[in-house]
Length: 432
Image 1 (cartoon, rainbow, N blue to C red):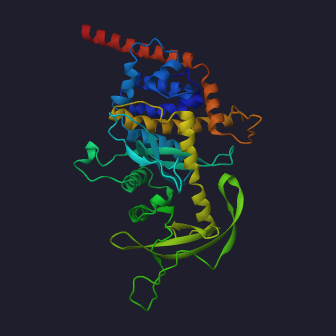
Image 2 (cartoon, one colour):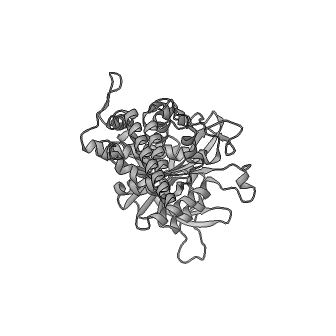
Image 3 (cartoon, rainbow, N blue to C red):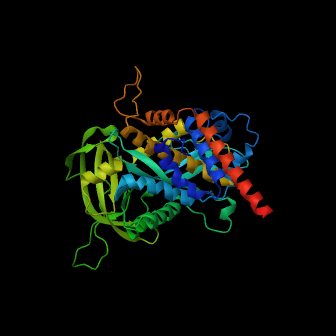
């Protein structure tokens, strides 16, 4: 693999430990190159066509990399997370959300009907068939962009109720999967200080208790009718004080907040430490609630498990959550998520996490290329840019590869050399 650029080898070589055979890893790298250069649908045949392997008769071997090759996706997620954590430092901001992958087909067992949050609105409901993925990303700030990037590091598939795996166990909700993912991440990185950001679906008692147990801060949006109470007086034996109103009408502070798109915006906010009564068992959790006055009769209610956080920190941290939505959109437009066509359960469970990981690796490689002065801001007359976007990063990685056909042929030659050496050694051992 010496013929590949060093900036790319340094990020691909750690994944070689996943494969028992060298030729399997070489096929994996060829599919990686094809995924980088695919401009339409990201399929196995599309990747082979881009790298000039139209006449490959053993194309089924490349399909088996996803369906039958024995490598662990959990180990791959750990390797990818380790690469990202080197840039994040000790204080890491995690973002969690669910992504709907629109898929149809009678052989796809994990599909179900879900609400399409992109096409739906407050007055219009749209449902579609698809797969629901729980995605955890890391917020990384780069010097060449004013917008932070949400880099996916861990994905898990949410199985519907009628899936064969759920016949002998309880159905796991998105919150159950999120709690298990947090346990795994904390086991991987016990020394890091994590802060988790989520939307209104993640303001749940179970997730809050899990974050407190793992020493992870949680910031999420709460329902307007959440049961929040004041702290009880010291002289009384009551566990809860008076219930707080749904909307805050007094004690507003005018703050200058770094809002969406990096714009500074003046908002009125108010905060208070209180007790949250949630769950069927009426569990009491101390939290900090922040009211943000958006417009008339419309207030944003945020919660934070850390009582020491400032109002400005809570609001600006919640604004960072939107970067994951941008990642989902760019993965659909440039990486090819929702264009794969696998029917095998194993291939379905691997393809989408690998594509999200491809997004992360492209950003990491482009960051190194930017330090070498190899990135260009490509703008048009109708779209003038002052900062690098993901399309610019992808083009920089493509230029670094050069000719994809030449790169793939050199990889195949090294594969044939390794196979020839193995066969020669086998014949010598047999003759002996």
